[in-house]
Length: 391
Image 1: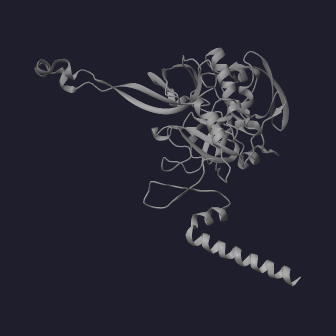
Image 2: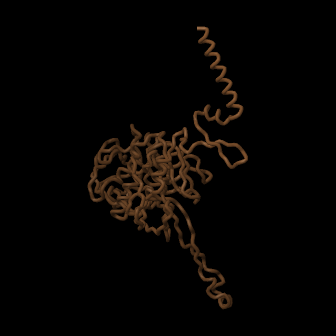
Image 3: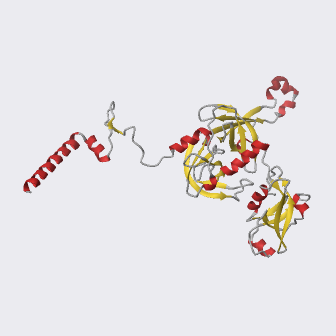
């Protein structure tokens, strides 16, 4: 036993001696062994440095695969518009005109703006925001692979701030549509676009909220809220999940400075898909309309009308000769259901009526003088946007 103990002590002593020699003469070897990785010495430099092997992987999770999958389908949208300058007041002077001729005729110069878009079909259809392309005389699309092409507007829907443009190029990288309805608050998302024209940029955040409305941005609102940085130029870009699938079209930010404050809004892909399909099929989005002006039920109004519930929408006005007027709906009615689906508020009412097919009959349930009644209304076609909240 004593002999074994003596042998063990000698072995430890030799080991410690070898370790002392290593850390004294080759400290880089010792560092590599402590970190559990092998490092290569960088040569050709006056300073001694260590370099990680090419095969080394980052310790933290990466969303590089999701970005790599989605980025080729996100494009830069450049628009230009001819801006006419007013006539020079001296043009009516014959003496002035004799010397300067047509040099002071009405001049035209181009105004440029930029945004982003998402290729959603190999056939060249691109989703973007209406405010990016509205009133543009020329639209140019720049792809991530360096190709450029002129685009034409297929159609636009100002009430959701969506537009569809088309380019004619081959081998286009279309994005994969995701399922925004399965998103949860806290899910990681990536925003891809061209902020401030610096070039394609990816930012990361989470889903901060779902179903945001009553923001006064669009007529029909059902936004995904995110804290992924969205800045001017990101409009029309993609909000994707960690698999690179499209969840929404980045549309707006809440900001007091013009830059990102961590409150951004994207239109869900489900809404964008419905709008796009309608635009491609009909050139516009066709929605139902009954011709009434709704008003929210406030506690004061609920008390005034003697309501026991705060759900529904008060009919503040009825368009003369409109579908609701012909069906017998009156100002003061409380609209509580559309085709059996309960109405929570004016936003809910607008969405439910918009989903009705023009020309069909719809059953509208109202409360009138504390009594419930069902009215058959022949649904009309919603007129083009006038920016008033009239349904």
